[in-house]
Length: 118
Image (cartoon, rainbow, N blue to C red):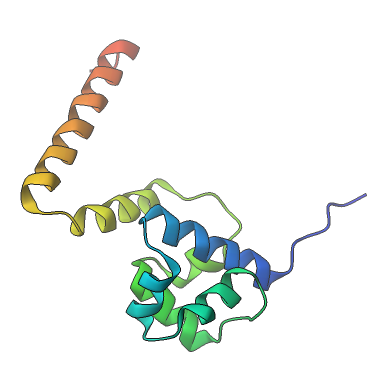
């Protein structure tokens, strides 16, 4: 028997919540960026309301992702992951940004050395 798919409104809501939380934003933070009430974000994330195309466009802009990232069931590609990391870094002070990128570089170098890739 085929697995029953979750309704699209619920899938989109879950994705919005996931992206919002990955940025350490509250529902109120996202609502502020969209100039809506926090209850509107709650309704979207719970799947109680389905966003219009215009709202999807606004959400994608606020979350710094493509609209397709909000409706896709597929795992993030490396490019999408890089965009998400870039969005996180953009919110940091320059010194913190440098610290995070330095740590990432060191981790990548260590992992490449450990696996024999130079």
